[in-house]
Image 1 (cartoon, helix red, strand yellow):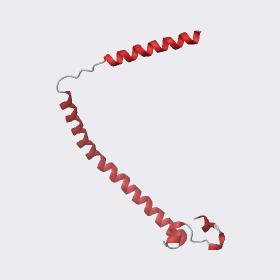
Image 2 (cartoon, helix red, strand yellow):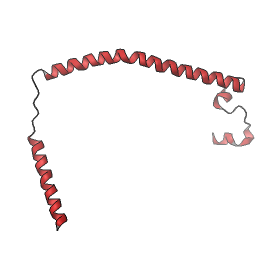
Image 3 (spheres, one colour):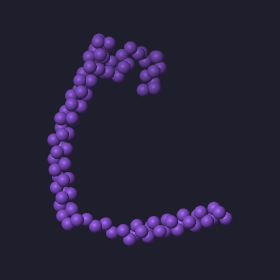
Image 4 (cartoon, helix red, strand yellow):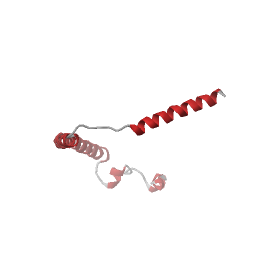
Length: 101
């Protein structure tokens, strides 16, 4: 019986909340849309100019990492053929590992 009362009370509370939410009418000051659009345009231009140097840093670091990996592969395998790039330069077909590729 007590559980039934809790359910009824929570239902009444929920109904009260939904009624208040239905009556809510937000009001904005005049010119709100124009000010918001101006700020968004300024932020978009500012964000683009700030994004390019960061992108350049990440791109150059990625190129440097790929270069270091290629140099490491060359020194460890003696060449940069497809087998050494795939990591299968020392394997023979009868080893069974190639059947899983």
